[in-house]
Amino acid sequence: MNLYPLPDQGLIDPEATTNAFMVWQPMETSIVLGQSNQPETAVYLNEAEQDGIPVYKRHSGGQTVILTPRMLIISVRLISEKLENPQVYFKRINQIILAALAETGIQNLVEKGISDIAIGEKKILGSSIYRKKSMVFYHAVLNIAETPEFIGRYLKHPVREPDYRIGRKHEDFVTSIHQAGFPIELSIIKEALIQKLNLKI
Image 1 (cartoon, rainbow, N blue to C red):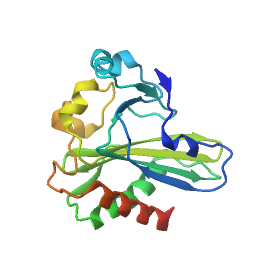
Image 2: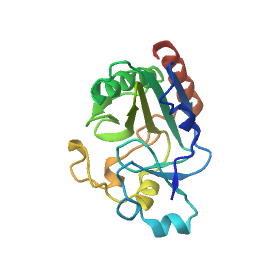
Image 3: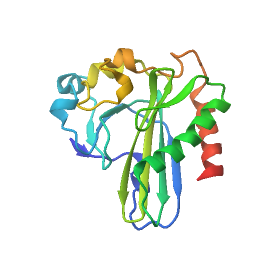
Image 4: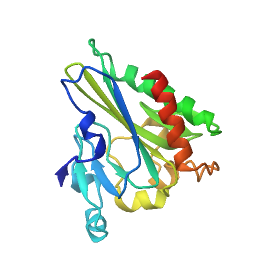
């Protein structure tokens, strides 16, 4: 297991003085542990090793995620002289994402749990936050087209779950934008997110 080496790592700068963001598509599949997660309890390591999927650990909290080329990652650095409750930042950025997704024609979008976005009762986005000095780093995984079965092959049931999960396994809890009935191209969703974040961040 290695420390998080992915493209948005450059945004994590406690000395930064400006807001910044990235919306990016992973070029390969990887598994990323939350700061408090352990690989043995979060990941089916035999399957990951067998399929050549690397496992990394990130600075922020939250649960373990899998990143694939069928997803988008939304990474935002905010400078905040007075650090608020994390819920303030989750709410601020998730509202921007919700507005962008709605503009592409996706319906039945709702905020769920602490920081998730769902279509109905099924999760399409999870997010986490890392704070240091006056910097707040938010990143989220948005599932455009990855199958819940693929996710469930590698990720064990999390040790903590949001109230609306109600013990559901990945296949019953997670969906993608495409699986939910909105076959919008990844590039269109990416551009909508960039345009909205440019206006608001």
